[in-house]
Length: 193
Image 1 (cartoon, helix red, strand yellow):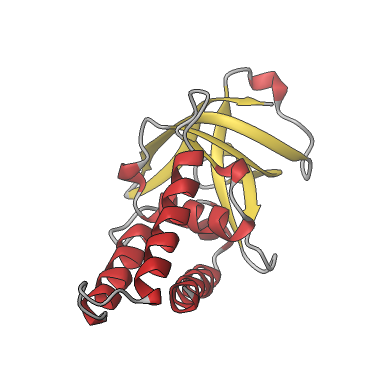
Image 2 (image 1 turned 60 degrees about the vertical axis):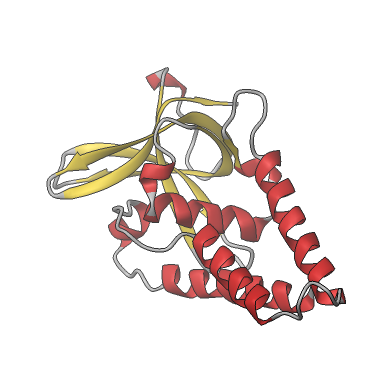
């Protein structure tokens, strides 16, 4: 079990390091999608590697039961995200898992399009001179508060935007859109709870 937890910790920290490398303020706030392995893909790959190295089934090992426990914990956490009409509830996950899931949303947005997302973070806004538009974000920080990912959202009621730097809980439908040659992610028809 410790080996699986260590592998999971290494993967999550690798994701943090990779995502912290973005220096462009606009790119950090509005990340375009590109093809890359998902967190689930990497976890499944590592677990498959370790399963192929394990002792044959005729000789049960403590490692095998620990592997099943790890899978059960990950599946339970994934199932907990789906309830009350919300497909992905980031408010019920640990801070490390929230950051990893948001990173996944930014890198493989097609897996989330049309899903109802619930998240909590710091509200902020940004005006972009090149598009002459105002953008609204829910900023989610990682466990160490060194890096942040912002998910753009558009409220149903345009007059309901809070003051910047307030902690907000936002629920909305995940969509992507193109601006120029770049794809961006947003929560449409969002509500602040």
